[in-house]
Length: 316
Image (cartoon, rainbow, N blue to C red):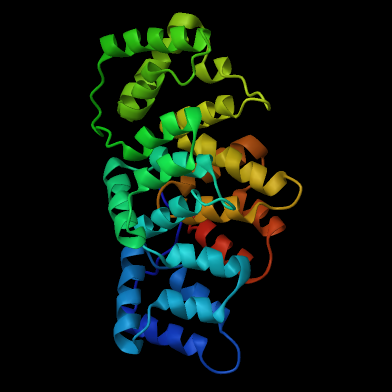
């Protein structure tokens, strides 16, 4: 469940485009108007505004934002304004670059999005970068991470609710054997995590707990000297309980030494229309503080106002 507030009566996209153009004009930029409009429109409405803006002014709205804004506010607003598949393609591309490389972000996109959305991300990546996402991931990763990430970003999982309990039990045993042997990137582990549906993986991990008396994530103890342990734990969390993965990501972004704006922005912007309500509930349960209060205390200016507009909803 998302968290953004869309007005009951939304103006035509042509009117929103005109108001945004006015916000860019004159002495100074009217950031308040920009937030008031864009933070309270859903993805389909934002796409219509971009179309209307381009038709009226001969320029992509994204380019207009880039001319007028800067810093973390600009990055957050740009990511929010983009179509969700375009946004994920951009985040994935950044994650393959030397200075912004992130195996976790690639895994996050691959494991928390629907199969149809991930397929659209791959199609959009082709158009934007004239190559495939799989190609870039394979080129910019190595070793066990490549063995896991390439099939993860290539996946098209079944999304029905049907579960094969016999298969779940047998694959729980396979996972236990491989983890006991510390064969964390064995082809069978990779096959199960990258091809099975999320309900099937949940059933397998429930059998794992029943058969061996321990959660699989407890068996994969985090070891600061072994990044693969943490990566596998995060992968399993993203596949089975993404709200817990995102809660931890937000907690680390906010509570560490200084704010990790990239992580904070990414989670709020990508989840505001998807699952942010559940993430907020998990954050409150885990930290005994509302996420909006934590964000308000750790951000400032127009950047903070935008994030808060995306986090809050009618019931808060």
